[in-house]
Image (cartoon, rainbow over all chains, first blue to last red):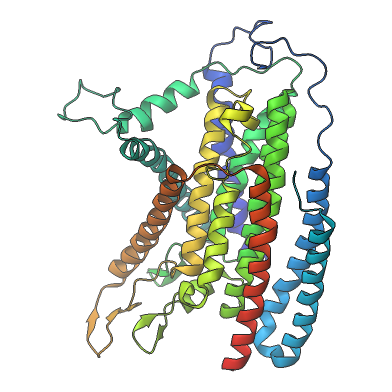
Length: 118
Length: 365
C-alpha cells in the first residue's frame, strides 16, 4: 500500500516546493511600494462602488448541481468498465438500462431548459 | 525501503523536470509560433554576449529574460483581498497539474544491477482515477484566485471558469470509459504495455484505432479544460480584462500563465498514454525490433529504454504543438455555444461511444 503511494507522496513534496517558490518569488525578490491608488482593483478607470463579491446568475448553481448528478453516475461506470469482459451480456444489459436512465435524465434536463443560456 | 524511496525520488524529479521543461519550451513555441502564424517577428530583443549568432530565435527572451523580469516584479495585492487565498490561487492552479505526472509512465522497465525499475513514478492501479481526481482539483486554483482578489472581473472569470471546467470534466470522464472498456484496467502502465501488441501482425494496437471517437471527445474536453482559445471565456481579454488573474502580478501571474501550459502538457501526456501507444515504438520489444515478416534487430537494453522515453516525449510534443496550432487558428466561442458543446454535443456523444464500444466488445467476444 505505502509502496504504491510512496512516489505520489514524494511528488507532492517536490511539486509543493517548486510551485511554492514560483508563487512566492516576487514577494521576496520584488520591490514593495504599496499605495492607495496602486492597491485599488482594476475597474476601467472608475472608482469601484459596492462590494465585488455580489450576486451572480443562478444558472451557474444549476450547472454545479447537474455536474454533481452526472459526475456521480460517471463514477459508477468506472468499476463496470473494468470488469465488463467478465460480466458479458448480463453486464451489458444492466448497463444499457443504467445509461438509458442517464440519457433520459439528460433529455429531461434539456427539455426543461436547464441547459439553455440566453 | 530507503533504496526504494531514493529511486522514487529520482524518478519523481526526472518526471517533474521533464514536465516543467516541456512547459517552458511550449512558452517559446507559443510565442515564436504565433509570430510565425501571424506573420510577425516575435520575441527577439534579449540576447547574451552581444549576440554571437547572426539571428535571434528569442530563446533567451522567453526562457531567461522574461521569467527573471516576472519574478522580480512587485507583488501587488489589492486592498480588500484575502492575502492567504491570493497566494493559494496560483499555487492550486499549478500544483495539482504537476502531481498528475506521478501516474504517467514515461518508459518501460529499466534494469540496473539486477534491480528492475519501472519508469513510472507511482505504480498506481487506479492511475486514471488519480489523474482525473488531481486535474479536477485545479478548478480550485481558478475559483480561489478569482474570489480572493475582491474584483468584479476576477469573480466573473472565476465563476465562468469553474462552470466550464466542471461541464467538460463529465465529457472527459465519459470519453475515457471507452478506452477503459477496451483495455480493462485503470493502470496507465498496463494500458501502455497492452498497446505494444499488433493487429494482424502489422498495425500497432494503439488506443486511437479502437477509440477514434473517444480520442476526439477527450481532446476537445481536454482543450476546454486548459481554458485557452477557443474556450478562453474565463480569461476573455475583450470582456473581462484578464478574467480570474486580472489582479495578479509578478511571479503569481507567471504561475497562472504557466498553469495553462502545464495543463496542455498533461492533456497531451494522457492522450499519448491512452490513445497513441504511450512510450511504445512500433515493433520495438524489450530486446530489440521485431518487424513484421520475421526480420529482427537486437538492441542493448539501454538503447531500447532511451528510444522509448524519446518516443514518449516526441508524441507529447507533437500533441502540444497541435493544441497551440488550434489556439492560434480558431476564434473564441460564445458562452452559450460553449455550454451547448459540452452538455448537448460531447455528453450524448460520449454516452453513445460507451454503448457502442460495449456492444462491439460483446459481439467480438
